[in-house]
Amino acid sequence: MYGLLFGGIFSVVPAVLFAARFVWGRPRWWVIVALIVIVGWAAYFIAVVDHFEELYKRVETTENPSQELLDEAYSDGGPLVFAAFFGWAIALIYAAPWFALFLMATWIRRMIGAIHRGER
Image (cartoon, rainbow, N blue to C red; front, side, top):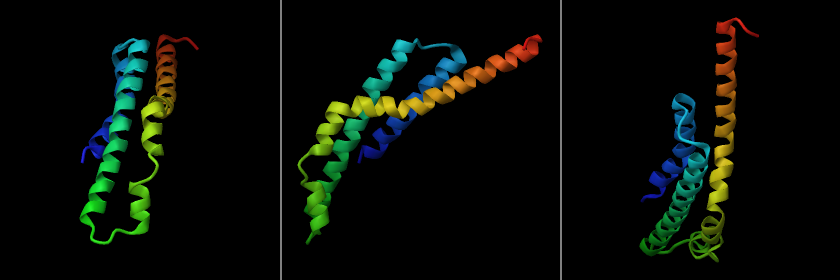
């Protein structure tokens, strides 16, 4: 139920933070990294937990659930443990391409500024 919402939050947070840094020069880098780690981890973990809750509901409401559905719903909990311990790393890895876009946009802005000032 909330998996899509938190998946969206996970997806949007790095873009919004890097855009704010690009436009206004704020927030500071440590705030950006801390928010990506904390909010990204929480959103990823909640999305994974919600996915398994949806699977449990699907198993309970299905008259004869397939073996594949049962195996996925009642797995050993590896995805939950991974999300709990390494969700922060997933958030940082996901933020890396956004950081690359931020660096490219900053470089382009500097080049345009240098051209307008007559420098090279």
